[in-house]
Length: 282
Length: 321
Ligand SMILES: Nc1ncnc2c1ncn2[C@@H]1O[C@H](COP(=O)(O)OP(=O)(O)OP(=O)(O)O)[C@@H](O)[C@H]1O
Ligand SMILES: [Mg+2]
Image (tube, rainbow over all chains, first blue to last red; front, side):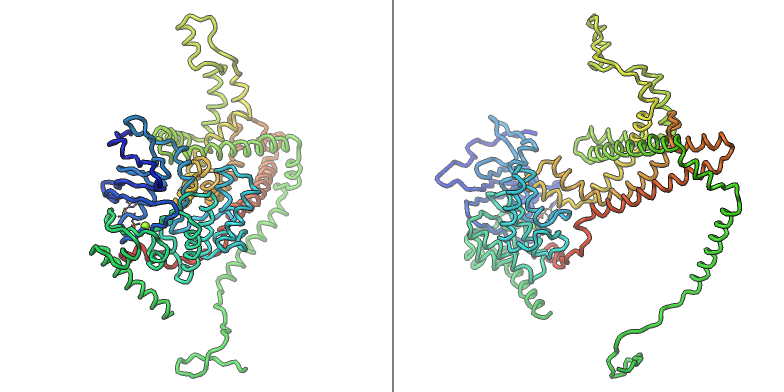
């Protein structure tokens, strides 16, 4: 299927600082159900962007569109200046081949809510898999790099453990190391701590904090308001497939302008207090 | 410490270790007795009824033609047809779940046809029918003869030809036939194995930039094997016995035919059947050991206790969380 580009001037101009990710009017529907209704977003190099929003607002879907786990129906996404998923040739867009899609994904690391570690491989094998199989890195070098990454996430001693023998927090940290092993330019996190027991959330957020301060560009879907407030450079509040409000965390979280943002944050806060009370109670 | 039985809730004493009497199972002992008597009767009939003639059966087992049939027919046939069956079966399963409608259709028709046709009939067709229909197999340009006559060429664009009868009438034909039939069953087994793998595995591999082929070979299939191996063990054991159908080709270098031939020659039918049964039992026992190790290998990483992910339901369930 080909499609005419509205105008070639929609391409971002390579200015003094081209954004690493630029999404323009991104649209996506599932069987006629419009999930994304024209998302605009820019993420600059070294920036941490937190995506907030109620369940079903399309956060996961948007994240998956960036690394093409979902294809978009309209709009454009550029990562590092490359149009995601398509090749513009004259007036027309052409779908990329599977191989080209895979190549684009290599620059983007993704961390899933449910970790999705390879259960038949040990922690270090999980981390080595992509460099060896995809990049063709020599096994010895890959192992050494993987050891360093596991040490970076505080799991040097768990290299030989299978995922099934690790706690949720440990699994998620291995998953982060696995994504980092490809030296991505961009890291996507989809609610990385929401499948974890409360006492394990901190260890994962700590690794993400370190990553942010090391200058990694990150897009993080999260319900951890503390993390968003402290670590994010930019907070985006999504609701019903549109960006409702965005800006610095102190504005969006501290002093929201939109009603929808305010009611969402209020709900989050009361739930957070409940969870706290629960944790204190047990 | 004295042993006390605290059964009354009103007592203030704290209950100690439990030392309860097990439930009695008198009928179990009855069943054991009946079974023991039956086993004794069977063994006694083995020993007293000399028509069994186990020593003759033992001798038949180690006759050279029987050993040859075992190795070149039964074992080679099983290994060969299972290799074809598993490899082709996985290919057909992958075709079946691909997004390409042509591949999906082909794999559906394949499974439909080869599951419907009895193996015996298939082997007769291959052994007698194919050689009759196609005497020689010409290797060259597709429709070379037609194209050549159309263009008035002297050559018929054939590079070489094979004697079809020589192939289909031999063990090779038998292995191909059993393998094609097996692939239809293996395709269904492999498909259920592939579908059993969490879709998140595929996505994680894709997100790492793996190609489709690689993620299939490195991530999906190794995990699918955990589900594929046990029924494949079943299929292999069934195949050991189905090699006795090779006679339909006809291939006579095969265990069951050879024991039968010897037994017929000396008018001792039962010892011949005992000899082949004993060999089948031995082979299947060995296969079961092999299956145990295969299952252990592909089950690696799955043995340990899964850590709890208690809060997982929360974010999707609770509104906004
Ligand atoms: N593969 C799919 N097929 C059909 N509908 C889908 C699919 N994926 C998502 N949706 C729908 O799209 C909407 C947005 O889903 P999405 O997972 O992006 O929300 P979310 O903001 O991540 O929510 P949550 O906070 O619960 O994770 C939902 O209504 C969901 O039912
Ligand atoms: Mg989500």
